[in-house]
Length: 150
Image 1 (spheres, rainbow, N blue to C red):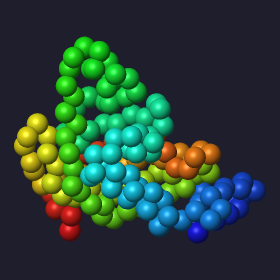
Image 2 (tube, one colour):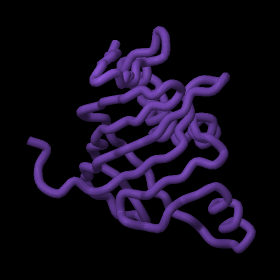
Image 3 (tube, rainbow, N blue to C red):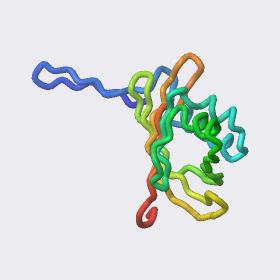
């Protein structure tokens, strides 16, 4: 558990600590469940892991995905191709701030978009919020890893 209290010139600074009983490993399991649903293309389950206003910057530099994009595309007859992934998580870390966790990790493995498959290594920063139903993703940002993972 990460918790610290520092006093400097009468100023008290409290560093974020995990929610009672919450550990980085437990949150990683939630995120792994999320990616298992993505791999299985269980979109309803994936959606349950997102806040309604969830936003996402895709790894390939496309525009921000935000609430309503899919519905708008469907109304207009557009097909959005977010691809399929068969990735795993590497170097997972979580920093807790009350009911908010900032996650950093890499996604590594093959991803197929528009019929083209490539092996990817992406850097991920994600914000997850804890509500009465558990942890939900509020924002997800991916960017390609330039260079090697070593």
